[in-house]
Structures are given as structure tokens and as C-alpha cells.
Length: 63
Image (tube, rainbow, N blue to C red; front, side, top):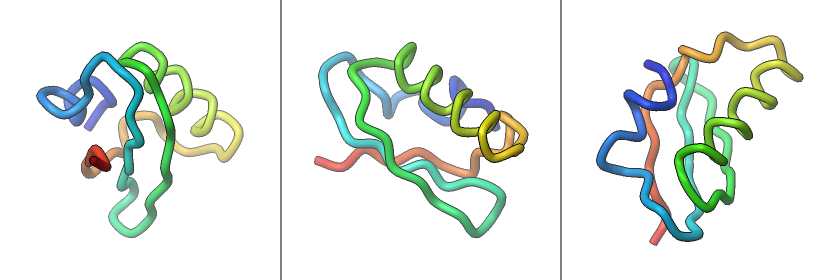
């Protein structure tokens, strides 16, 4: 899934910690203010690590 598909209904405006599961068995964590910022962080992470940006399995918000 893409960041927008996986984040729909999960990512909200306001600071949050988000766990992103990707490529079936990996996970990373980002702190972001909104979907736009989370998307930028994810895009940079994928570029730096040579992962496809549409490899998301899930996004969970840490409360």
C-alpha cells in the first residue's frame, strides 16, 4: 500500500508517533505532525534504504 492508503483513518493532524510495517516483516517508527510530514519522512526513508514507497503493510498510531 501507499502511505495515503495505509494512513487513511489512522494519521491525524497533531503530533503523533507512527509505526509503519513494511515489506511483510520490517517496521520503522516516525514522529510526524500530519500526513504530509509522515509522507515526506517515509519517502526519504525509502530513498535512503532503496525500498519501494508502496511497500507498506500497515500504519499504527501510538497513543
